[in-house]
Image 1 (cartoon, chains in turn blue, yellow):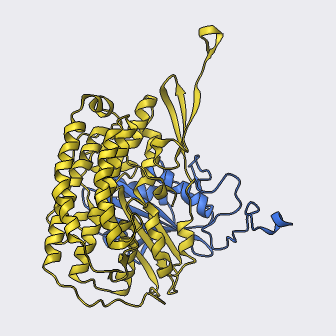
Image 2 (cartoon, helix red, strand yellow; image 1 turned 135 degrees about the vertical axis):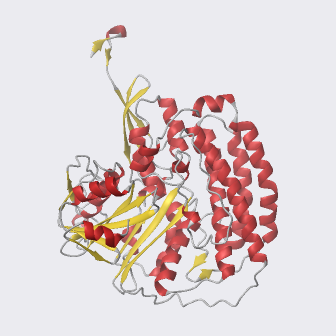
Image 3 (cartoon, helix red, strand yellow; image 1 turned 90 degrees about the horizontal axis):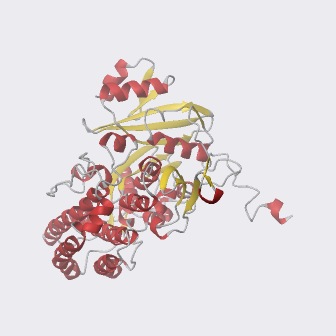
Length: 143
Length: 370
């Protein structure tokens, strides 16, 4: 399935940098792509802090057709989960929650992953200062 | 709750496996809920080895970050170096010489061999067999000695640079020695391990990973191929163009199949090394045309590359705004998804099998924690 063919099928989507950009109905779109075009592996979900919003790139792969597909969407602080479609998304979404603070509606397992419980802030956000009170070099600890 | 022996109540037990358990190959903590010896739930707890690889990338220039990438998986550092260098090369349109390409294939496959050899030893040790560990470490030592001579490092080589490799290949005799000795040693491993009744009892039909489950949990690499799905990135990799190569695909789906697949991969890697040596001998050392690593700036855009690492698909994503540091860099590693799979694969198994099943997935923690 070619990405431009797919764009013709899906209304309200556009292609940018070889990615299919979707503005809404992410869950249903990914479900229909998975079922209709045999995209059976979700290789990864990448989060990028773009300043005002966070871009999520879903990298799908089809083993029978040997094709890659990048689907991208922009969210602010919550997104639809796809963990009921791909189990591996649970791990990816958890990582994105930990690093970017994005809540995934419908994924109940979100917790701190790399960062300890109760850590302030989400490190891969561009506005993260690393000034957590637990850090030894934090001013509050030295006061 | 029912009243049991000596008035004790029958209930479940929470058991912490790790983070310092020898069979977790790093610092993985599994919180298991047991009923007797049966596992009712498994919750992996990771992050003990988190070094902030992705955040670090946003602060360091490309050449400063280059030595760091080996440490993502210290047992197979070449693969991550290759990924990172390849991305920079693609972005800046740097063409590698044939010789450098073949040297890279040679080192990648040697690295894969050392990684798989360690796994074989460690896996057997998990199952309680101590001597195979010494055998496989003995052979791995030959590979590490070669790497030490060539690169000055035993594990984290920092040998690939943008546009080629740091030094020309040397110590060819050492590699020839390895490819002469190793096939016999692999035969020895097979003789003492593969059909060993105790080994079979511990691994046959244990940890069965169905095709659909493997795909759903995003399992790649040897674990996926041992479940019967033929997906090996080396078939389409530009470095491996012109190499004869057959991906190892087994239908067993169990821990034994994953062991067997790694043994067969060793042979396949040796085969690739022979071809690489042959190709290298036909090319002459060229004057290096390195680009200056200082002040590298990637043009604005997004760059993605992937490679077949020993523990599954490894990929890199770089978003650049045209600066000398990436705006965002993301690593995708195979082990991260294997850890997630444990939640499913260990359910209903016995505790002693849990070690065998977790071991058979070849999880390495630096790769998980990044």
